[in-house]
Length: 302
Image 1 (cartoon, helix red, strand yellow):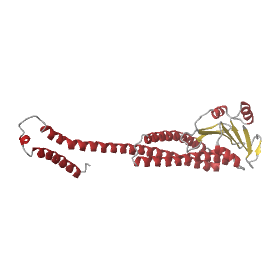
Image 2 (cartoon, helix red, strand yellow; image 1 turned 60 degrees about the vertical axis):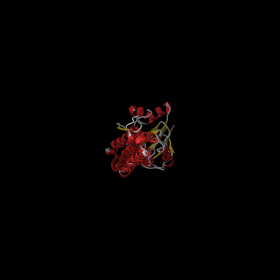
Image 3 (spheres, rainbow, N blue to C red; image 1 turned 90 degrees about the vertical axis):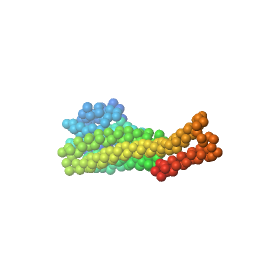
Image 4 (cartoon, rainbow, N blue to C red; image 1 turned 180 degrees about the vertical axis):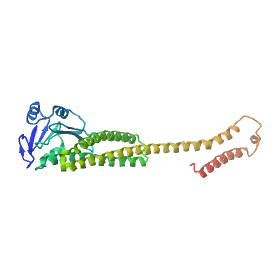
């Protein structure tokens, strides 16, 4: 599919040589040949634009600028695919050509609402919407991290919590790579002298991508802290169990010794023939157990 709009008023038009925004989606070989005949696309840039899953990158060719900008589709979905739009900008003729291999929601919204504007401002507006997908993802990620922190602080002992933490960390690292590549491409773009007075538009995009990158770093550190809190809570729970078992063992060990001594078959114990021998034996057990329990209670063992 090939469609075009005039930059002057946003009206639909055919392929023109100047002052036009051309949008190309999953073109056929005949449509690609038509585009190459109308505009001097560098073959290397066109090959990169046609490649599925290419990373974000920027290149300055003799006749045009070329930018691949890869963003997120639905930031709330952890298993979301990524969207990629390739931009061909011809400064001499003021032509912006957007190339994509799949539908991109934010591009469709801007296309339908476009009523005219300069080529660079249209380009900046498209990139701004792409950057916004990363901001939405970061906001959604912050809420998820807070939920995980609450689970860890409440002592959730299910194995689901560490699995969710590790899944979120993998997702953050994957998104962080996308942000790093996209930010690097925008840095090369904003430093071009030909942007002139409108270079600030692209500098703002780079600054925003920097904030997203810092937010992802902070989220990664927070996820590490959540995992440490969860493991600490598990260790504390285990320590309490071991402490309870230790208290029981300490209570019964001297009582077992006392019972073992008087459970022997020697006739030398005078307590065997003593009228109060049974009371002495059971009283000794109670005294040993009660004394140890009181001593451990004062030390705060239980």
